[in-house]
Length: 261
Image 1: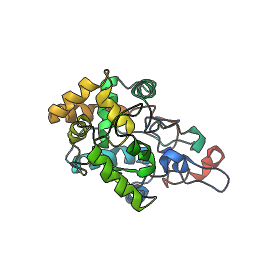
Image 2: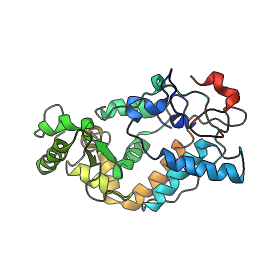
Image 3: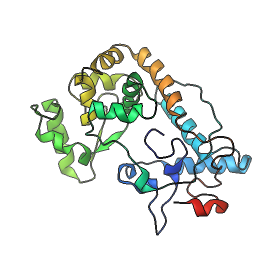
Image 4: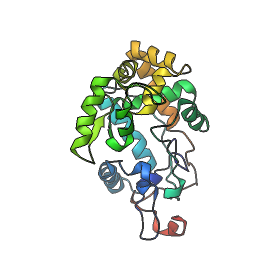
């Protein structure tokens, strides 16, 4: 929702064609998984009530439920989003894991997201993994310099992990990897952030206080996370007669084929 050209419109679900890459195959999105879960939900909904629930709403609701199942807040959400008619790999502008805090602040601010909300949303790294190529450069620079320092024991562990395979991954939260909690913030205060941007949150003067506050108060983080996720789910949504409600989340409806790219 935050970084894509059209906002929260399920454009990432569209499959590429022979002639053009969709957002799904843009570099930053190639590690995204779970598309088949959305497909299953869409089929059930279409069988029960055709052309009523958009793929954009399914993504947003599935995210909320996944957060709750992982121990996070179970927050309410507005529905009524419609699916976009454009999906182009060239429109994807995800900030990389090496982006600076000021750079990230600008990206989020351009979408109306505040500094506190940015730090909150990056706390979603409490679950999930990162492929080694996103952070390998940090493993040889653990003593400081231009790159934020990493705990030496963690760096040694990650070097072994990444040496095993080119496709190796590491949990972004090395403590409670499958729970939506505030351990992520505690970890980065201990210099155990995996991605550069994560670690910089604990070091930058504009964000370190927010990090410390969330690290010391799980309830505060979860309340802030629920509010920030609701706001993120409303970024540049399509409603009314804009867009469409797809029959198949992987493809635009036949009448809209001329608008594929």
